[in-house]
Image (cartoon, rainbow, N blue to C red; front, side, top):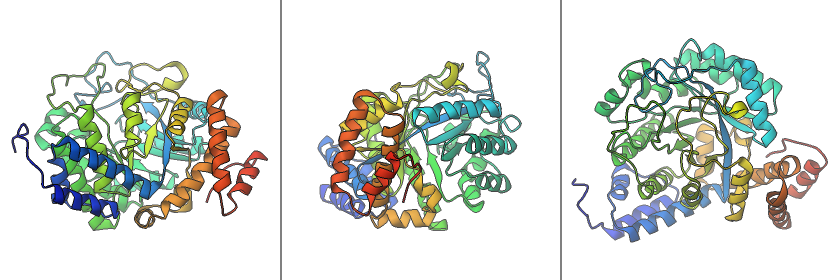
Length: 438
């Protein structure tokens, strides 16, 4: 298809597809392709509206918050677009000791975070499974962080079993691009140069016992229409084979990075197309969490809350030791530098519910069970009440000033509508009890 050619869509067909998604059914690849091909801005307004409605049907108004904790910038790969790449001779390399990782986690806990995403560059000796086991164990043992997710290099099934047994919730890994010629050009050396090894990573993780997996492509490495459709195809294959697919789909977009050798790429993704990607993920796979990172500017992130995003990072640093002393070489530039408290306040001001909940991972709501609860529109009941409980903790222990006053008003409104003993649980939190969830 000539991408400059405006194709008049079959409006009735598009609305049939949106109705299917609003019924919380996953879309077929021809249906996804029909949405991708839409060029009419008025129809995209309908698509965005449908994505917002699907998100609220599944998750209600809650938006989950977390922070990444970067463990290592030492890497054996040479991904041309990454600040951590082996060929970046100006990069300052660092791998946190276990004690340093605990120190950073403790600092984030003191700001109110309860879930962290541990991120490491790909270096089998510096950041292999032995290292992850120690870091995960010590953070759980020495802090009040309640769930840890991991974004790390693809592993063998045996190593994935060890990672899962350590208590990790979600394993996350991105294919980057599914377009094989572009993949091979952008990943010239290192283990990551093996497209097939990376493509099979989710099969190995699932076979090792992971039910919650996180997937994505790095938008801007190739035509977003191709990569988004290919990612959805990959997700559908996993669902058909295992009964469930990704717990989350992330929407990272290529950003400038120190030492990048890929500044010439011609597949930049506009803000408008970026919004389309968020909506497409939400509509194609209604039950998944759609994750937007601080790569994106604050105004755009705020807009995405109403298009289908359901999880966001906040107050992020993308270098090891970044929270303690600003770190050194970053993996990429940050677009939204607001603190956790500022993002919480913004979410609340939009009439949405900030959530620091970690309940599903510890209540066994994962994999097939989570997918079923989401499609039955049951999970949003858990999400709403757990969001309120986690927000009450945040108000009691961390929130300050106008944001605290704003959250107190929100909670008071929720108490007036609450049932099922929620008000009693909130009183228990006021009395000092913590980690109450359903």
